[in-house]
Image: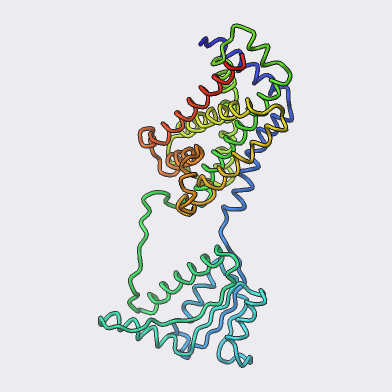
Length: 385
C-alpha cells in the first residue's frame, strides 16, 4: 500500500466536500444543533412544578416538623408552592380537595401532613434512639405519576427537606447515606450526555456519508475508473477512511467546543485521547458503510440500510440511558454494537479521566471493528474488480 495514493484519494474526497457548501454546512451545523438541542432538553433540572400543601399539624409553628419541612421546600427550585392550607382553611375536606386538584392536573403534586405529624416524628425518633420498634411517622404525597422524572424530582426534594427539618428540630435522624462520589463530582447530566452525542454524531455522519458517496461514485462509474488504475482496493478504502475519519473528527471538535462553551462541562481526561477514540470509531463506521453500499444498487436502496443500523444503536448503546436499564433479552445486542464501546470509552476519558491503558479493552474492540470493516470493504472491491 502506497501512502501517496491513499493521501491522493483522501484529498479528492475532501476537495469534493469543500466545493459542496450545503454538505459542509450540514457537517458543521448538524453536530452543533444536536448538542444544543439534546443539552438544553435533557441537561436541565426539573423545576417550577406547581404543588399544593396541606398542613394539619397541631404542634406550634415554631416546633412543628411539618412547618420546618414546608419552609425548606419553599427554598427549592423544583417546586412552585401555589398554596399552603392549614387547619383554619374554610374547605371542610382539604386532603380530598387537593387530591382532586392533582387528578385534574391543576398541580403536579399535593403534600398532606396529618394533625399528629410532629408528635409521631418525635415518638419514632425516640423509639429508634432507645432501640425499640415503632412505625415511622408518615404523611401523604399525591403525585401525578405520568412522568417518572417528575416523581423522582419531587421525592428527592421531599427527602432532603425531611432530613434538614429533623436536624433543625434537634432530633436524631434515622440512618441516612452520605454520598461520596468517586467520579463525576459536581458533574451535570450534560457531562454524561455529551460523550454519547459525540459518538452518535460521528457514527451518523461517517456511516451516512460513506454509504451514499460510495453508491453515488459507483453509479457514476467513478469507482470503476479508479479500479482500472494501478490503485489497489486497500488504498481506495484507506483513502476514503482517512477523509471521512477527518470529517468525523472535525464534528467531534465542534461538539466538544460547544459542550464546553454552552454548558461548561469539565473534561477530566485527555482531549487528544477523546478525539482518537472518535477517529477510530468513525473509520470503523465508514468501513461498515462501504460494506453495505456494495449490496445497494442505488442511493434509495442505500438509505434503507440507515434505520436498520442507526435506530438499534441509538436506543441500545447507552447514549440516552444506562445499559443496565436495557432489557436482559436485548443486552447481548447492546454489547454487539460498536457505539456501546465508543460511548463507554468517551465517558471514561471525559468524566473519569482514564488514560489510554485504562480504556484498552473498548479501544481494542473499536480498532478490531475498524480493521474488520475495512478489510471486508477491500475484499468486496476486489471481487468487483
